[in-house]
Image (cartoon, rainbow, N blue to C red; front, side, top):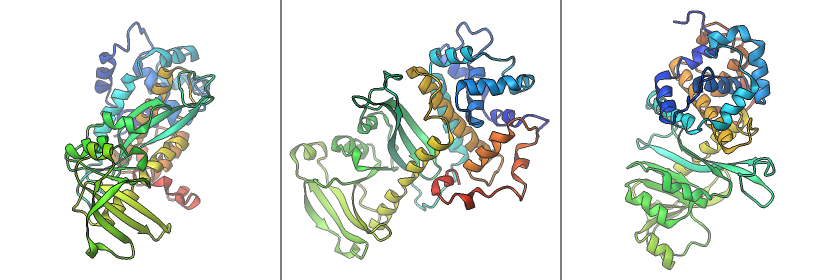
Length: 389
């Protein structure tokens, strides 16, 4: 039971300090750190994310204004701007990446029974990447275009739970398809990809791992039809075929048969052509799985709008990656709090309440019990608010 803890402390109590210490020791993160440890750095950065600060200076100003509360937040004495900035520039970002993996594992256990709108018992993952623009003259290491800098956030999202189970940060020049080499594919799981990931050699690796993929076909696909399932044809399913690739290199990379489905979406009035190595699901089920790929787009949109990962509080690659990984940790902590405190509100609503109640001492669930609380869903009809619902 809450004993007068600040709301911030109640959220951070969900983070295992033992696991965090293991991650710090793995990279010797506290080397020569007398007072300002990696944990205190983590607390300061999470505070900035939860309260939606605009910069490091903004974050430290807010903390300094509440210096009498820092001991109870776990930060201790007032921290200078240069101390936090130096820590972000020099302490290995992999500490926070590894800790994010710990939180992901915990969130997966809490959301293991979540099925969302899908009745399929198999795990379903969407893989995609989003570009975060940077100023090339300031972030000279983030190569993208001739006069433009950027980084890419490559993500594998569990469609049922909205939990990112794999994240990789690269410069903007790295093509998305290369990240497929880093992912461990789970047997009997479905991986939904956009056609930018068309690489038949890598798709065949998914097939050989015992997993299934669903990807949109490119317009210039060369193939020969082996057979068609005429019984499956209707107003939506225009064709359901077994095909073999005829392009020499493509057929060498993927020597086995593929399934090709042409589907008419009445809602958008568009025709989609899907390729898959699954020959069991109905064509409409394949189309439904691909339709749920939009959840990863919502995830990217959500974290860009509501976490601080578009304006960075440091210019080095280490500082940028540190900020992004701690933002992901913040996202996961709020998701874990939603489950552990049995909160019915959307993640967006939870974050908004936390941002103005961070120094309250009320038990966290009571913040969401007032019936007069503003209904954000009525003001914002976008589906972006459905993360973790």
